[in-house]
Image (cartoon, rainbow, N blue to C red; front, side):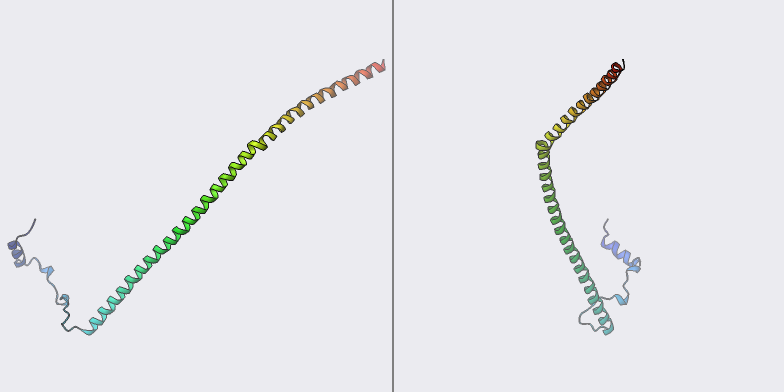
Length: 145
């Protein structure tokens, strides 16, 4: 919906744009026109402080970025160290598992076999003890007769 030139002129004549009228204090700035020195000084201070503020914000943003870069570098180094440590632990664990399978497990199996044999000897020793007690009792019985 575009307005024709006639519509714009009618709108302007009807006074519907009263809120758009510019006050005298909102006039455009002309370089060669004389200005109030106080306003010029205040405007210069405003622009200087605005410039200082924006530069400080940019420096702060840059420092945050540099800090993040440093944190990322440290994290990369730390994770590389952790990866190396994990690889060394994995290698050592594999070596210990191999040593267990080759050297310790056979010895543990021998210990288990010896334990089974000792249990058998113990059972036989109890039987023999029981038998000798029976023989002793029988011998005493025969002696008394």
